[in-house]
Image (cartoon, rainbow, N blue to C red; front, side):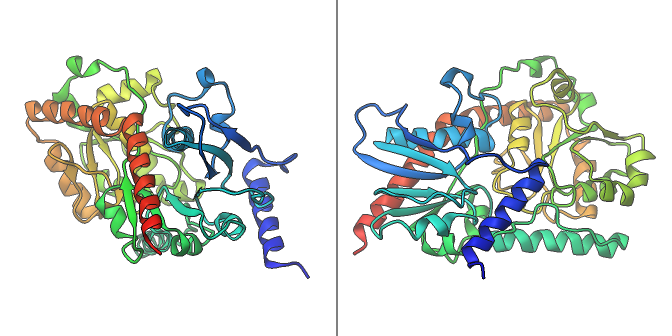
Length: 399
């Protein structure tokens, strides 16, 4: 009879086969002895379980456009190097590898292999859980509530589109500290755990000078929905219902699931103010044309860390229209969706479309400035280092 660990390994392999469409060949890529950013010979050793592939190309060939997971995978080992750690990096879903040496700290992500690795580490290793979202149970509850509410409104019951499939409870319970993406709202979802530090996501430098030539008067009528996968999770259903029947334009840059498209066929095909583009690459001419056309980036997500796609749009001066679930501080430039339901969204967008043109322009300038100043890779790097130092320091002071 197979052990629980063996069954879990097999399940992970099956998931990876399904995701890629073919079986995985050979062992997963791992990276050992990373010390590219150490300013002196490292005196300590760190283990990171996250993404490996962004670090494998030569430094000059690594991705410098998409931050979020790809950028964080580069900056987490960099931050640890700068703190004096040589770093080994293994994939967050690697169930084959186990540590064979001493590590001073372990930074793990996700519920697949955190326990698998952690149980092989000595007690004195500082365990840090890095989360790109809110507390996993709350995350799943919010998505389930969205699906339930859709069934009440439309009569269709769809399957979850971004649910967390592997428990993160062991990681949350045993880590000396949790580092999560997001503001105080994100931190609050982890309120039962003793040490949780929220840090902002980041956006690579954006070389865009279009705000000076933008038609902010016309742009008041145009809202950009630029999002990763998960139509229900990200709130596209709510946005379609809110925009339908208005004279405001919703520009949708997201892959539409066929089951979702069937339910919302009328809104997606019969309304001239709703525009479907599918997936548009960041910083492409098509994307920048939309950034010039729209004053607003809108999100009605139910659960996030901090959506990188929304931050990217904000870097182009698109004014954020967001709910608390986006976990982005709106300061004095953004617009808040208090209830994040159809009626609330419709009321907010109609009011936004009447905003004074000069006010729109000023908010756009402030939005882009906030991204440059508070969501840069350098800020992420410093915030991550500070969080690690705080967790390590607390571990050292506890008997």
